[in-house]
Length: 69
Image (cartoon, one colour):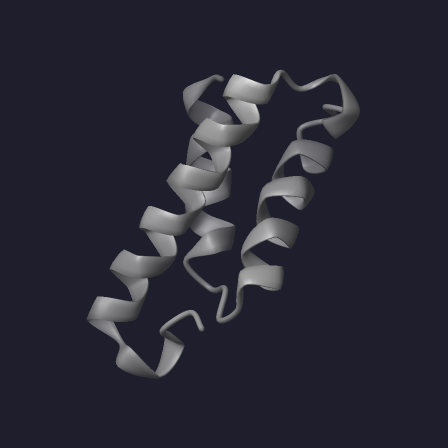
């Protein structure tokens, strides 16, 4: 997975408040990069979700109001 996609995922996921919003951030990031999520490998999808979760957690620590549920 390229660094530009990771950056987009981190940016979108940092605004997520729920797990649903977190997953939506991952899929929206792939779509905005014109990548069909159906063709993303399982390992890349796992990596994307981990990156998103870490970004959301980091954003939640900076601002507890945005802590994902």
